[in-house]
Length: 186
Image 1 (cartoon, rainbow, N blue to C red):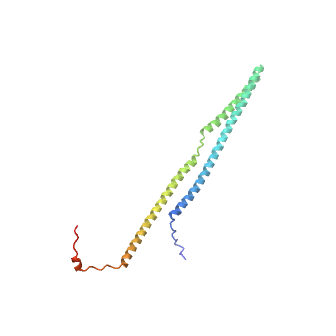
Image 2 (cartoon, helix red, strand yellow):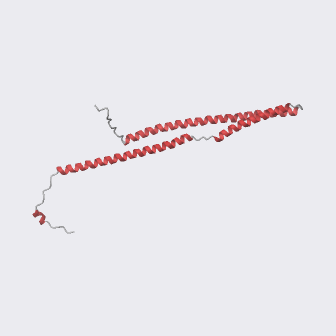
Image 3 (cartoon, rainbow, N blue to C red):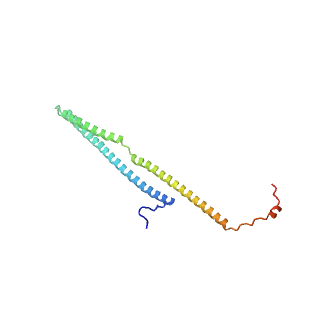
């Protein structure tokens, strides 16, 4: 049983595990970004519909005011009584309301952008995060490679030393034999 004060060190994940985690997190991130883009585009569609409604109201009020103007002209031409004056006042008020409604919708449409700016900003952040993850993973891989090289170097050195220790030593040459040998000419 381990003492409660000491925690066992967790083994570092392998490069394959890091890549699998990165792939899983990237998939989750892409799904979240698509949901964000969908929500943002839905919001923009609602705003466009509201502005289109104001344009429609302006057009309908303009049509009604045109009918009133036509009625006023008919009354003006048909009689000499001042009833047409009241009809012209109503037509002018309707035309003013139609113009204001149309202008409100049109200015709302002009300022609207259909580009999902929040999603694009978030994608830029996600790209930076993914680069950092890959850089970290590459650094961990380099560290694992260096550690493996060091372990292999130590293993090879140890094996070489053991092989030398286990091999029979050559017999030293006698001084007479060494003297008979001619020096090589280079």
